[in-house]
Amino acid sequence: MVGEHSFDVVVIGSGPGGYIAAIRASQLKLSVALVEKYPTLGGTCLNVGCIPSKALLDSSEQYYNAVHRFAKHGIKIPPPELDFSQMVARKAQVVEENSRGVELLMKKNKVAVFHGIGRFASPTTVEVVNKEEIIALKARHIIIATGSKPATLPGITVDKKRIITSTEALSLPEVPRELVVIGGGVIGMELGTVFARLGARVKVVEYLDRIIGTFDRALGKELLKISRQLGMEFFLQHAVQSVEYVNIDRIQVKAVNSEGSPVFIEGDYCLVAVGRRPYTEGLNLEAAGLTTDAKGFIPVDENCRTSVPHIWAIGDVVRGPMLAHKAEEEGAAVAERIAGGKPLIHYHLIPNVVYTWPEVASVGYSEEQLKESQRPYRVGQFPFLASGRARASMDTEGFVKVLADPLSDEILGVHIIGPRAADLIAEATLAMEFKAAAEDIGRICHAHPTFSEALKEASLAASGLGALNM
Ligand code: FAD
Ligand code: NAI
Image (cartoon, rainbow, N blue to C red; front, top):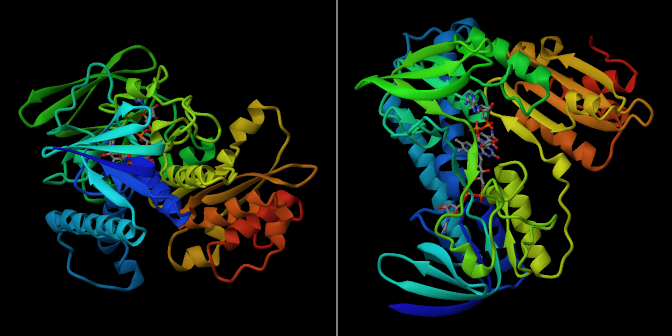
């Protein structure tokens, strides 16, 4: 059966890029269709990314605190028992609730949802292919928001049983006894710490000489120290070459160290977390007159417009950080552009967070980037050890680092590792969007006692006035 419909905008992919684009387009009085190949809406972020990983991070932190920290707070309980299947079931429930929330949002905003694979039949028609039918959607504008999939390495076959990606790691049947994580990036550290807190022996094998390599070096150094205290082992400057089964329930990772010698690391599971690749399979881009670049991304200009003027692409499938909030900003901006608006995204001010505990969060330039561009800067740093609020909750690890221009005092970068860093970074981002000086944050009254006082203190230090509580 073939049906045909016409819309102002057809969005392919219901992740945070796609569904936000659909909502904004509808708010701007455009008729909108959203195409999603899976039965549930929300994309990677909601189904197998941000939301389920944060649910497990929270649960594992609660468990860890019950085992290791309650007694210090004066709470005596019998040794807690881990019910891992309940932990995974709670995570699944959180995902389901969120996905249903997106369905409701689509209904509320009168977005027509079509389930099936979206593929171009021509530059102006997207066909939705599912088991029952093919439906043709004609569109004035098309937004590609098909996201990304886990990448792997040559020499590694992900069998989804014991050699797994983040997707399987979020639904394991058991806590691994020994987990080898390939890649000390964001996923490696977030999921690595989940299982370390639940009792797994976690070994991270990382190609670089540091973890979370895209962040300011000082943050990676501090997170490495804290993660080692948690019992995690690190094999830095080790390039993984292959993963093999040694028997039915044991794997062995082969890596080469900085001296060029082979190193073998064993475990009962291996999590491959070496980045993600843009996903365009099944789209039939040729029919739209589009191609991908050498890395598989759909080329777009600064406004997310492809080489075909009425076709746009956003989120993980285009250049820039692979982050849900970046996809959302692009989704809303493209919908506004289609409706005649001229929104701008400051890519340089997209915050980046690692949801370990303590959390890591950054915005703006790192110290290394400023050095490389030979831009002078002043540093102000404040340790959470000196924060009354942090001492009250026993969260004294980490610091806030503010980088500011030595002449104008404009804030150039803020880098935080510590309690609630993910929330604290919003103040820094706001300040930087308004081109604030470090002294501006330093002179704003911050409630006492709060973690946010650490940002005020680091800003005072960076401005040259000097921190008051250190
Ligand atoms: P996606 O969310 O990948 O959505 C794309 C959608 O398109 C999918 O639903 C897919 O099924 C659909 N699709 C693809 N092809 C077709 C087709 N031909 N037809 C129909 N539908 C199609 N980011 C953060 O900012 N914060 C985090 O805490 C965070 N945690 C993460 C944790 C993990 C474990 C992972 C894997 C990722 C995490 N991310 C996080 C990254 C975040 O999930 C992505 O950046 C974000 O989902 C990208 O959004 P998107 O809309 O571009 O694509
Ligand atoms: P990543 O790019 O953060 O880290 C991959 C790591 O693997 C790098 O450190 C790299 O040096 C290492 N690596 C590559 N090849 C290797 C080899 N042969 N041997 C050893 N190490 C090797 O990618 P990751 O962690 O897979 O995450 C993918 C993306 O998902 C991230 O870029 C991020 O954008 C997004 N994400 C965001 C989260 C957040 O915002 N909190 C959470 C999880 C994912």
